[in-house]
Image 1 (cartoon, helix red, strand yellow):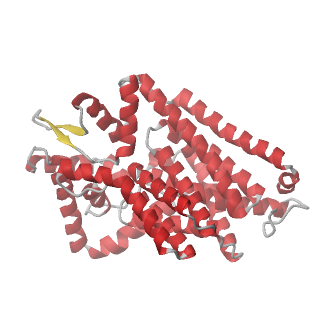
Image 2 (cartoon, rainbow, N blue to C red):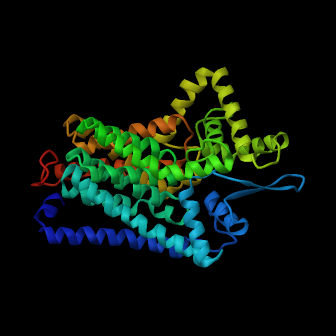
Image 3 (cartoon, rainbow, N blue to C red):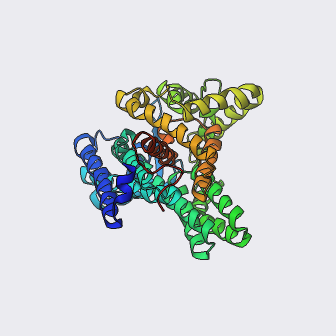
Length: 432
């Protein structure tokens, strides 16, 4: 296969590249048509959609909770990063709380998930400059079950992954040729990414630091950070005015920390939620907290106090046992999320891809192919690990790193093909 790809002209390879992108679009469109739920009464839109619907009704960003005695409290919120909330609000403003609005979001997911196939292809080609790796990487992300299925879940996955891959590409540009325009774009993309996923602040910080280590221009680094901060600042100012607290992006720090550090925690965020522990803890706090405009912040403070108390009282669990469990769940296998990870389709894709990924990373390190792209991928892995250690694991969070893991898996697969098929181009000497 590798020599056949090398024999293709640039135009023929471009056609093949486009065909795989089209294949990725087709399978996602089919998933949307046959599996997508666009009924406003049953579709799960998560907190983003819930808050956006509340904005339509109450003309401000609020959450609504009904207590056991029937009392209903409407309180201002910054619980979620605002990007997806505002996107839902825009669609609801145009189409109303209808199936058309949900269909529009489904179409956005399908299109952006297709863009991921394209971005992984151009990144793989740039990192390894080997057509076999490019094509195999695209096929992996194009057909991988979780990426296909994710378009119908109405999470913000597609948007923040597109922003991450764009940021990754800009980082490589900045490492290669330090320029003000690239720095500004990287900062803006990083700020926007934080509006969809708070932990992307850590991932983009890692990329910016890597670029600075390479170009050594502190002024460019400062400009990039400033651009990110300026994107986020209006929302932070809104939170300070509305909530009377410094909340940079999302007001969920307390719960997030408690989910990863409590006497009940086992490393899995999904287990905490599906077991009913969150519901029980919420009910406990609902009984003792004042039901007023500060309800969300007080609730987060209560969760934060419990998490910090656990960390103080159980340092071995907090700093050794739980981090080890989180690393296993995230980087090896999340057996606490059986609705996803124990499905036959998931396992059939995960097991060979995991083996190839490990093999690819080992090969790249042994061959010292530590290009800018490889270094940047490792930085993403380290940054995501830091986030994982301070939080809890959900199976879907692995999608943050899988586009890059797929590239390593594709490298191992291409190397294997070059060995078992005679007269093929070897991995050590990719076509340039």
